[in-house]
Amino acid sequence: MREFDAIIIGAGQAGPTLAGRLTGAGMTVAFVERKFFGGTCVNTGCTPTKTLVASAYAAHLARRAADFGVLLDGPVRVDMKRVKARADAIVTEWRAGIERRLREMKGCTVIEGQARFEGPQRVRVGDELLAAPRVFINVGGRASVPDMPGVHEVPFLNNRSMLELDQLPEHLIVVGGSYVGLEFAQMYRRFGAEVTVVEKSPRLIAREDEETSAAIREILIDEGIDVRTGAECISLAPHEQGVQVGINCEDGEPTSVGSHVLLAVGRRPNTDDLGLDAAGVETDERGYIKVDDGLATNVPGIWALGDCNGRGAFTHTAYNDFEIVAANLLDGESRRVSERVLGYALYIDPPLGRAGITEREARLTGRPLLVGKRAMSSVSRAIEKGETKGFMKIVVDAETRKILGAAILGMSGDEAIHGVLDIMHAGVTYEVLQQTMPIHPTVSELIPTMLSEMRPVE
Ligand SMILES: Cc1cc2nc3c(=O)[nH]c(=O)nc-3n(C[C@H](O)[C@H](O)[C@H](O)COP(=O)(O)OP(=O)(O)OC[C@H]3O[C@@H](n4cnc5c(N)ncnc54)[C@H](O)[C@@H]3O)c2cc1C
Image (cartoon, rainbow, N blue to C red):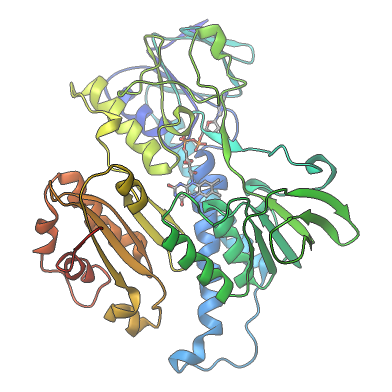
């Protein structure tokens, strides 16, 4: 048995930086990773998809070149092998960098393999038994396979296998109209595939406000994507041209035949093969590790960070988990998960940047509200760049005058939302943001204008 001061399981978005802080504080760390250093984000999530989104944007802009007075001779063609090679190169560099950093880290011992608890302070990796008074679980999640009729009778793709494609599917059917599915849907449409999105809910990206869902649907339909919502009974069956997807919508064809099917219907935590029972670590009914506000599990000396604790589903929430745990353990602070302001983005084009709660959620609180809204077509920067789709919206508590949430669906929405996030984090009233002097011409400059036109919600 090898003894360490700490064991970290999973080289995702929290583990590697945590190893840096722990070894920096003089601790010895055993670092266990079973597959790719960098986890989901670097290998099969954010990095490759946003790289592909960039290629898709280039194709889209090239098709629109004449709108800007730029003439291209001949049709725009997409070389999928080169598109994939570009994404692979960026992923490989990031992955290698993280692995190198860990292997060169003084005090850190990298062990490759599947980690499994054998007791609260004991973890087995193959033939090796590791022991430490502190164990940090950062095992992330994977695409879930839905319990859909026919799912095991057809070949289907997930976020990982989609990235292995280096040829254009003739017709890609995306089952799941939420964050992961919509990004793939739009990029493959822009690469030149026929694309159908099949979503069970009555609207896309159903956790957002209705007007956000409607605007996103319009953006996708405008690009020629077939959007089929309200698909009550989705089923899959082999077909000579690929896969037949049963949709059973209220209107439209009852089935659609695709050459390829992507299942993007949610994710599940990698906690089922971790031996958590042997350590006594509790999970909820969906397998997420239960943690307190400082990310400690029910077992003293064991923490869970990132997607596996169910307190966030993003790279930045996983990284923020690291910051909270490190600050509390090493810096004598008492930071809490409940103090963070949620923000995230959907990287279709134009992107959706989000902060805090939606208007619908704000209404459910019963609090008196003020709401401001502006169309992107009134943003001069958007007009100048010829990208005027979308809108921005902000919701304020009329009594405390603090911002409760915001959505910016439009060009640079993923960046402009940070002004709102910062103000929310600072805990000051919306007037502080309203009184800033923003730079012209930017998308952000319309936020103070919008804030000066707030209207009470009936
Ligand atoms: C297609 C897609 C696009 C995304 N885009 C974005 C985006 O744009 N922005 C964003 O913020 N988020 C995005 N996400 C979500 C983001 O990838 C995750 O939230 C993030 O990676 C979670 O990080 P993590 O550290 O919790 O786990 P992960 O990154 O999943 O890392 C977990 C690591 O643990 C390892 N592991 C698991 N079990 C064991 C074990 N028993 N023993 C040893 N090692 C183990 C795994 O191999 C993996 O390396 C995207 C996700 C997907 C699928």
